[in-house]
Image (cartoon, rainbow, N blue to C red; front, side):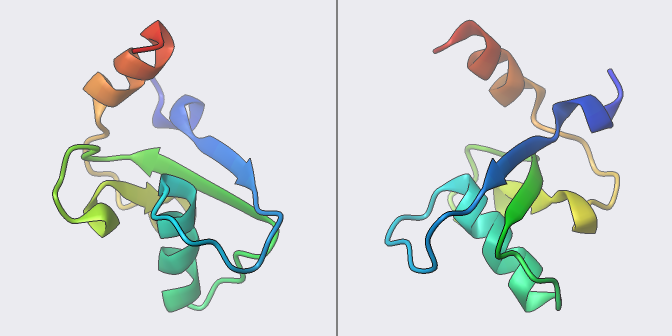
Length: 80
């Protein structure tokens, strides 16, 4: 499957969040790399079970072609 079809898009509504959700990790990645993540973030799951939350997702704008986490996408589709 083309990786472009796996992009998750989330619109950020608030400025300060308190949790480490995937979309917030993506916003942090974008901010650290000079992008403005204030409206919408796009990301790919690359290793959803990694103990370091920063390594679970990768912002689409920064995606380097590594493997995506197919198990996470299957889990998401099946609603588990």
